[in-house]
Image (cartoon, rainbow, N blue to C red):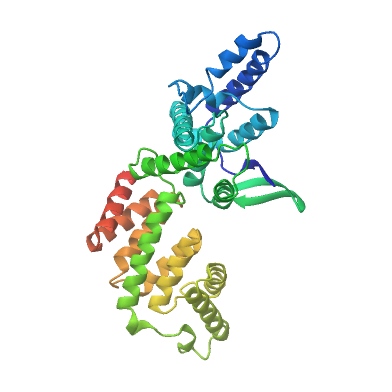
Length: 377
């Protein structure tokens, strides 16, 4: 069992809406306990039943009120813990009022998904929180989640958000538990992921280098790069270790060894090994580069692994070695993207993108260039 206890995502503003929702759920839980007690009898039970979402007799308001009822202390504690961990970063990204609307409408959508697939009444904030959790995964897939493990080894561990949330979704999908509104959970996840992807695609919320939408576009660009280098680079396919060395260079053997290691790791898709070998190579000689196609493969691999420093260095060396290459415009665009969204260097980014624009070959590339220039002002 893994219990989330926090994330490493910094916040730009104080958390307000998430705390308000936690307080509202807690107050409603106390009120629910009072109404279920002997003081109110059947009238209290009737009042609560009017707030439950019953698929066989649905009331429009119940799609919202059911979100604030819970079946016990463990039920509400688990829900509010997830809301406390995943809510603040999503609220920070969407804004306080938009986050409130997103939460409530997501919960209503989750309730509708449950009503469409089950005849059982449902209560709880689980669908709403699944919506928030799906949004968190879409916006911050590479953020680290701190989790408390109570399974085999007890302790605190750090897990990427993407893996933790995908594990939770898989648990609901493949191992449904008795008494759990699985379709409300899955409906919430679907709403949270799809709506957030749409907001990113429409640019209604700011994109980041590592949200799922941007990662998908980067994957597409890498495929384009790979196809282009495979098509155009056959004349340049030489092993880096076979390059002639200056006999009077005391580092010649080390340089050749590191070139070979970086080339082999890049061709094998080993981003960690390639990054280390190329970093060590640059420490020995600052103008180090590999064979043309291998240099591109290395740069793209490091970029896909979120090694912005290594990718930027590899792209820079490619441009220094092959300034008039057919892929130079795409490389300048990628380098401009790194300087704009990772290094926060708008001057360098704008110069690179402006220089790249005339040579871009596809509409996707030209659209990205326009977006970057608009962002940079």
